[in-house]
Length: 403
Image 1 (tube, rainbow, N blue to C red):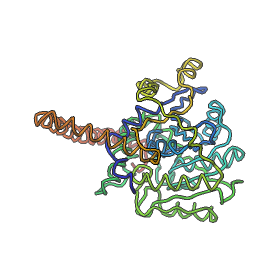
Image 2 (cartoon, one colour):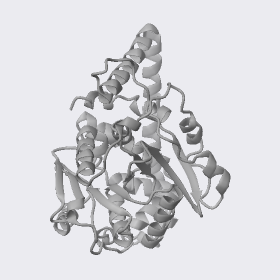
Image 3 (cartoon, one colour):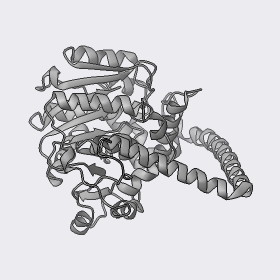
Image 4 (spheres, rainbow, N blue to C red):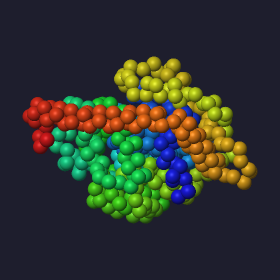
């Protein structure tokens, strides 16, 4: 794929954060953290992450699809503890941002929650894209006998449990980068966030019949490996036997990060097939630095408790605004928007490379030393956590069977 090398550059997420605003709004007792980018007249594609994901993991989809004239909304799963609570909270969220008919792209747990919402609110969901997902939770509850006390477990044990579900071992570079990015997102999640998501995963439930026809569903899976057992993926394929299939040869657990070009292509094909018309004519180009809501809202993105918010003021400060697409360098009229983004990314990369080369070997040595210190610090933290786990597990053994 033409953009793969550039889209995996270390600075692309920083560039995304500088251009796309992050919204945080309280609705009732729930705090919603989300991105909303693209022409507002287009029915949105809503992206729902898995247990280990946040709204940030779909940044490659947001940038690519918005430049083509689609509207993409990527959300964090809020702190809900029951499936019915999720349905009601998500519906209130859609009402608040004035969105009525939606298309959902859900991965892993996000795919399960997408089906659940489509089952109970069929008039609002027009299509589904399900990736590495499932239709029932009993397998997860059987594998986690300590689920009843999950909310009592310390944060580092919950993170350790989540991260053990990600395949360890040598990966090709793009998959390794995707794993590193998701691990960094897990470190940002609070104990309550992790506990609520694990509870949604193990709370016994299954997806009933959907009014949505199979022709409006696309199943997108990776063929190499995935944390979701093959048995559960086969159940989903059997349930939606008439759905479109989109198989990725490789991609691991997070193909939206490791194979963004292929995933974005399948998303576009799905949206066209279900009748969503892109509006590239409404894509707005603004001067660099013209959108400063993102960095300011990001400062406290994980702070505070769900029950303490200033409803009206916070909602007004972070209310969705009309989409504005990052600028691209001057080019001839024959160049597409993708070519402009590619040129822009290359320019940023070359600029950073030139800056590094002009600072001499001393700065390079400082960077190497800093990275080495960080690496040894991580090793120390890992061993410290192992010791804490051994000590903590002795106290939790009476409460957690089969630990």
